[in-house]
Image: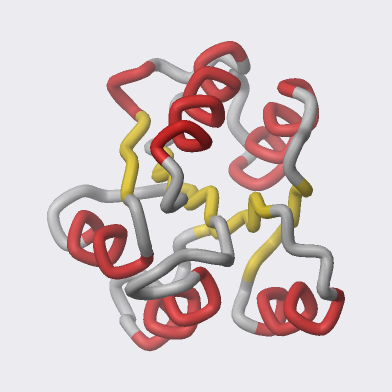
Length: 127
């Protein structure tokens, strides 16, 4: 079983690094999509089914918290798993993300095995 993954981060360099880690964790590149902010992510999700979103919080246009709020308003997307992958250390903000349905958070930088473990735990898939 595989999963469709969406990396949402405003930094192309960080998206590339996360994508590399995800590929090292065993996910096929064809199953990895990218967006530079929450608005782009929601637009992409109108045409592509996504199982798991790896979400940065600090982005222009639509930040991670705004994205998660909008995601939960949409019946067809409200069950998509979200993992916060950010440098954010404000506990109140991370708690708000959990209230919005984020199932995990991973602090950048992280080890590839930590990301793999979170994907497996979040989706129950083998990579």
